Length: 498
Image (tube, rainbow, N blue to C red; front, side, top):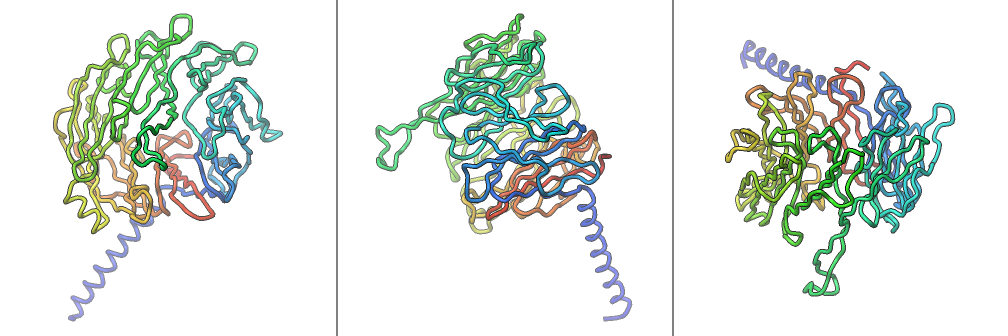
């Protein structure tokens, strides 16, 4: 090789390695990374400012290895520039009957408390500056829906809201009669405000192990609603919406601060016995400031999959009825929904993350263990999505057929701005032990190649949040780990001043 060509070749290799080093160092310098590990299995986590220093702390709910009947809450406090330590700063033992846990500032003193519902009502743990953890202290005595023992896991669905003009926050407790709404009185004690009657149990036909024909077999499932407080009738008072995958109902607050015993409206989105994957969202898709419902319905399996997306609007009184605004049909796709205004034109977009299915896609899936994730982007015109997507953005991901759920580590989030340019960025786990970041682009929505990659051990869920007062988003990553240790990873954005 002539010396000039050899020198050019060496220079080219050096430039490639140098640029790779710059990219790698940029990945490491964008976020501070903290591994919060426990010895056992993590059930869930909460965030809140538990010591009143205006920085968000993390509470991990877990069971020790080998004993799922014991549940701990490990508080990891954020310590300014030092960030988080891997070990817990405070350890709380949850009562064995505790099921549903939230973090909220119910005392209105600038510090979040750990509030939980068990069989006998609602209790609270408080972190005091001098004595440490105090509690549990009983707030409400009530025979709850959790009067039967729960043998595994923790529910962290929200049950604490600011609804009426009374001191403190309101607590909504699932009970055998439906949902009980409690308010805090002037004396600091909680008293019942309203009893909301609605079904909690549903009966579905099942095939039992002893009778493979399924004849005469039945199972009872408990479905907790996702509760949203929103002013549906625009009278200046928060109303309550209860949403399941297949059902929605609403209770409107009156001028006295009370809610009716029975719902103001109730809508079954799909038949209970339908054999399909159903997801629903409460969202204002038409811009009239009233919550509407958008839902997806996927059926047919891998070879003949079909998805329908339906939109149910609220009327002028905030009631959601059976009349459809729009229905979109997709073939060979399995999807759910994202709604946002990604290009800041005031119209908004419906984004459908879809996996292409069918015979060809299934062959690629099985042979190469790969598939394409399609982001189908539908502009909203006068609040309604167009019939066809205006853009389709593809990203490749990898299946893991060694897992019971091969897509367990495939996840995305497109709701946060990490680089501070005012555009939403995509955080994507493609199933290959890393998180990819695609920056938002004016007119193009997203970069086609990853702008940032961070290697992580089996990431499975992505949760953007603000850990401090800055405008740049941080993240909490859940992992799909096996073995003695479990972990949350905190990615704290270095662009925020701590």
